[in-house]
Length: 160
View (tube, one colour):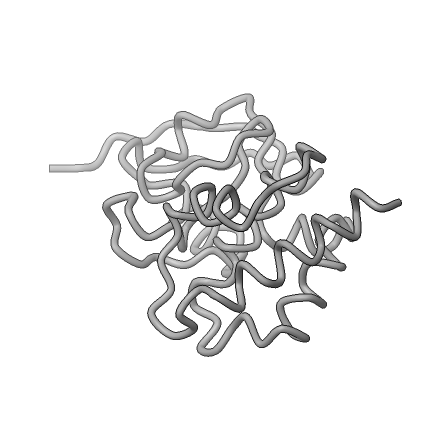
């Protein structure tokens, strides 16, 4: 039995992309396999860990739960796109200075989710940050350094 294919056109990190893909191919598999954008990782494949997080039309979604075909006509931003745009440069620096990453597997999803929180430009308590980030799992750092890094960047951005 052959797999059904469909053609999708989307904008990925500012670049138009058209590909023929299996209708059941997940977005994160498409990004990694078809486009070579390997920053988003496959963790749980159930939408729980957040390692596969990407932005679709401005909202952070789980790339393991969304099909590439669902993104036809959408604007998709990966961690590579956030990095290239400079949007998260200060956040990346804070993750390094606060030692908020160890193995790095969860880091792209953490950064993607934290960028969404920071984009709101609102004061946040540590508890607010912890709640917002609760859908992203890290098995190495214990979260304190991650919260420290996000809190530091949020406070700096609000001071400007």
